Length: 292
Image (cartoon, rainbow, N blue to C red):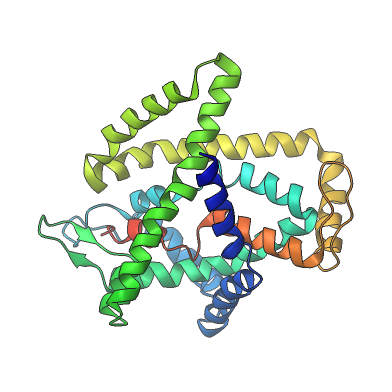
């Protein structure tokens, strides 16, 4: 276990902690935002109509609705990525990290818009009649770079353990062990069985399950966030001031977080921003490819 931890730590340092990483992630989002003339603003109303089912037709090719595809994509980010990920980013990078998470979220909307659109354009119908798509498909069919598609698919499988399974299952197991005293392996076994019951039903069962659970998760998350804000309403204005003032200067060690230079706050903010919204990671287009 220690060897696996050391390997993942080294991998994070080479990729997620690399100096070039936040510039590439934000740079791509900034390029498409300018090139497409801020689609996250211009198409917001249209996106709402798509999600609410205005353009859903049962005879269209696809396996599920746009709303269910969205909840499937969100199921891995609502919770762990938005709570512990944000808290850890602020702990490491100070208030400035939150600013760069906001920037990553705003520019990431365009990145996700592009990758989901390409996923739809180059998706294929499999032998069993279901739709399959994602970055590996438009790398292969659009760029004619099969080797890159294979490399991405392998990397996605590895990443699914690091960002889509381990943090969530570990968080659940730790919380239940602390509260009720159950051993982590017992919690993990139960989670594995419940997960198998869902995913063995294919994309339609996954989408149907997340369409019921994720909205509830989102409402609970929003209520909890608002409760914390109102309980600490006197700290809201100073917090915003600290986020803005430290965004381009860095921060000194104080209170509940470590000191951080501008470069480190920038890196951690963008890194955790990706963990929170997955824009540019390539996982969301796989789910959205099944939409009608």
